[in-house]
Length: 261
Ligand code: SF4
Image 1 (spheres, rainbow, N blue to C red):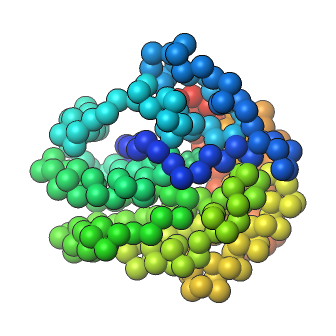
Image 2 (image 1 turned 60 degrees about the vertical axis):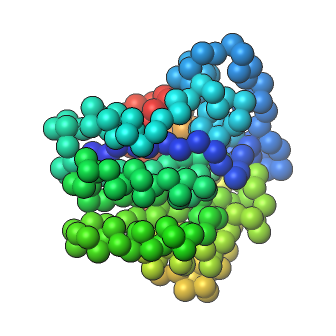
Image 3 (image 1 turned 180 degrees about the horizontal axis):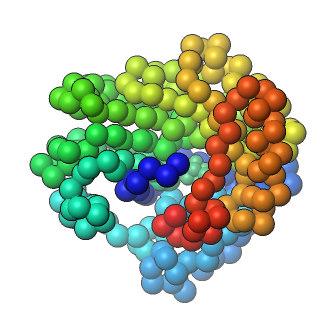
């Protein structure tokens, strides 16, 4: 939190997470009820308070509302965003959707661009279900070797049953343990209820049993301030009482729930 970062959001996800913010067992229809024909760009789409708040980045009905850019154009856009027109202390956060889907094939072309040479830290914000391909593993290893200051982080937001996704699809300890060979990995669980925490404890046990050694964070549910303010203190107390880390949602009070945050 607080690190100047450029967010690159890729399109597509293997999940829908329609259970977020819903009574257990029910799925949100909020995004389904949005008519894509009524909008010209994704920033105009309505924000949702249930289900995945990033639906514009994976729902095929909204795909044409997002720009399709080649690597050169992405790099130019990044240079425009960076305050000094070059990488200094900023991080690159690659998020989604799910950024470790087929996009793994595209990252080497992007990261090998000469203007990306100064980049020192990449974070993949992943749901922790996608294996790294052999080619991408080799690439990540070589990318770090080129410059000892470089770091790779896998921020794994594993999806508990409150997301509406099935446990056997969402909790993939072997895949997440393997990320630790190529960078630092940590787990992050979104918590709304006691049941969510019980599920998180069960998942943590499964990850640890498969050798995962990284940190674990609890994060309060809430893409909007009203929901977030209801349980952030409770989740912080829970994290302290269990010896786990607490992750705030700095973007909620700072930027509210807006596209691009
Ligand atoms: S994994 Fe993330 S991007 Fe994909 S549907 Fe769930 S919350 Fe949304």
